Image (cartoon, rainbow, N blue to C red):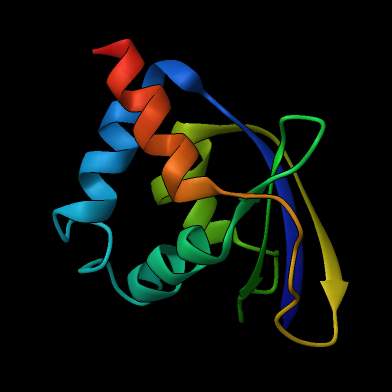
Length: 106
């Protein structure tokens, strides 16, 4: 199923998250690592400061494995909504924002 996901970045975990996204750690995770990386490239920061993106997941519980292994370490207040396919979201690119937050915290 496809989901629109909304969550709030744990800013103190930004540097670790950025490193793991860029160094291949997350991309190498099976079965969902490449989808997580691609999702973060699609993600945007919306006006409320939350992060929003679209993602596909085949778990009976939405994003169960992704949350356990990655997302719950880096985001709070995650919600999901079923949608028909990948969605375009308006906002600032999340990866740019993540780089700035990571740099500011180091």
